[in-house]
Length: 605
Image (cartoon, rainbow, N blue to C red; front, side, top):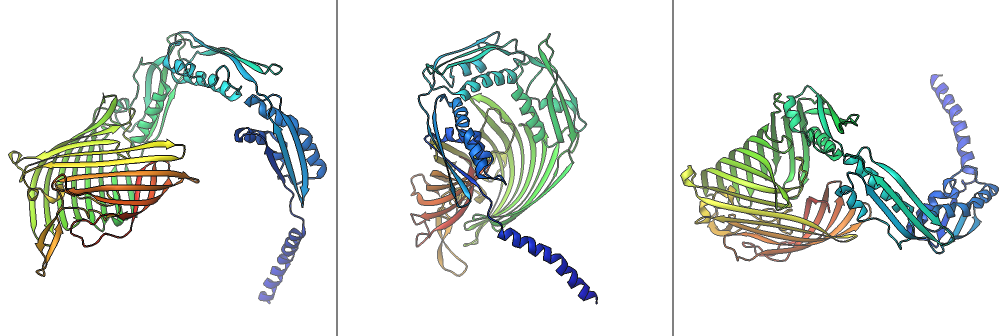
């Protein structure tokens, strides 16, 4: 009986659902309005569509013939109104409506006619800020001038630009004393008059801070402005970003308060809530160079109220495993400058070599500049390194203890806040070791890297990359394997495997066979040229050519490759999948490698 009762209930509920489904299938398809506008440019057409009642009601539930006729009666007036912002005040408009099956097809033909032309443009900025470049930059490059077709949006752009500049750069009493656009449709001419009074420029007042995470003195070192400095709202935003990126706080608000009209100052309030002290991160991935890889890290974001941090990270991949611990102390400008104590253990397989390194490296990071109009991140460091290396084929081993002082410079944006840089626009490093310092070998090494993107046309881009390394020492065998250069791979000469390009030497393997062994080189030279064509949906295709090698003597032959790739544009970087073909045979190989797949990341173009 219970089973029979359940089935009866199921049938009871199923019958109405079945009836509703049959009614839906039997009912006629919903009518739609399809509109086609002819005779105008794309930007004008888009504005016409935004004005049309046809477009607003195209999916209405009740599209009767009478209703569509009423919409058509509005059509001419709506088209005329929509074209005035583009300077067309007397267009000729014709419309037709056809019914096809259950839909209404609307054809609108527009003859724009002669446009209204601007005869006079007078934009006058007066007051204490009249000569401020934030205003002259607008008045010296007006988006509309005498002889142009009238554009309402360009007229509004001038007014909006002046008002935004005033509010951003502290002219908080600025006002538009005249903003007038005179249009004579009969003569088809227009005159534009804008008078703008700047008033006095305000300055930053005192800053009050409410937070409990770190010392207030440290918070004030994050500020991108100082009391009595000329007001600039972008510096408040940069302060917000700097405090957010510090990771000391869960929430931060940097807000200007009511201005003092007598003293012409703007006080600022900063409120922040402390962040969680610990952060754990785990990640897995795959790269054609590293193969499968995993990462685990723990960070104590606030060791004490002085803003000290501690971070440890473990990485594991097929060819590389590492453990890294860093103790970080903010110095100077805490957003960009720091003192770091770093201890690293690294096991790495590179070509025919295997290295195990223990490295302790204190370092100072500073921002310097402007030099030659540019700002640079300078890192000064000393590495205390013990490196144990083995040549896998021959079995030869080498152990060295090195003391390596060094310094690097990286080009950074003018208002850099310490964020991660996904490319090295320009990077230089010099480092070396000497037996006088207690090292087991003497060498001096220089490295230069550069990346640059260019826009060639609206959908065409070029990307250039170069990498140069040079080492001064008596012979390569004195140089620890971990300090040698290798080439090939995703970020080097594509078409060759990671670290596959290297000088070779003849040796005997464990079976007594004479073989060639890749040893790494004193010098490195790599260059890449890439041409990129944009596609819809944040995609792009690329064609590229790479050249380079690692070698012991400049003048040794370079290896070459070409290929094609697909790019996916993300907000900050481009993810690329490349197919590359080597054009040359590397030393120690009997034949040229076949096509090779590469997965890479590069700066967004």
